[in-house]
Length: 357
Image (cartoon, rainbow, N blue to C red; front, side, top):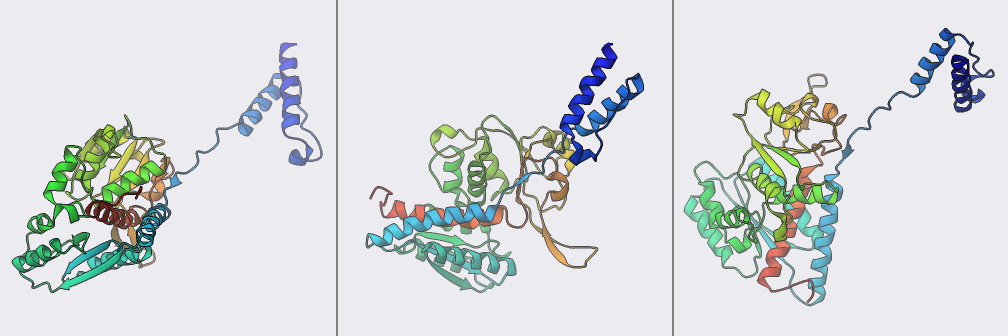
């Protein structure tokens, strides 16, 4: 009697859930023996199997960058409406590095969009270091120049650190001057390098929680890896948008098997190495947030065409991640947008301008 009643209940529920329009003209009829009951249970399990997990939400860097640029544009329009001059960004470009030329072009386009005046000074790759520093000093003393950056890399005969430190800290919108770096490390107000600042802005606007989370940063470059590690772990109570996360820094000498140990426990992974497919699906846990800063041009073996890829196996990892950035179109646009925001900030500090003016 108990078996019969169980089969009757399951049969009734089955026919209610899957009517004729799904199963055909005849409703499913089950016998009252144990075999029929087993068939019913198996069929019930098939229709109630665990649904496949949705792929990761794509973090649209272009859309977020546009939001930031629109916010900067609103402030610049307000400045102009008050009869004041708009902010100005000056870029020093040494040589003809193809990638640098493209980066500078993107920065100039962003400046035009926001209403920031931009100026590019091009110098030959034969320029001597002291000549470049003299040009920087001249711009440091120019009151019409609010933001100043030297596009990196510079030619080998020029010491990059000397050039970065030559830019006045109050105009150092790249955040590379050693005084800005030091202030940043002790939670003092400073210019934060644009890429790490963009990553934190991206996480905030996507609603990704960093407080108390485990974060792994792969890469320890002075311009991206180390600053974003500092930013993620710093105390957010200082009003600096810092992350309050527990951070592990990995690099080229981290053994692959140990790297996997760290990434498997990470809630957030930021990779900035330029090594394609460094992070694969078996190295991450379900629900992780992936920020892919790496960008490398490779040749597709099937099509023979070149394309840009990041550090992360995008197609594999997106099946497990909660959020993931694409390459291109992820972090890159945020870097340019935050540079515009830093330029506006430099102008506001110099001119004692605030939003309440």
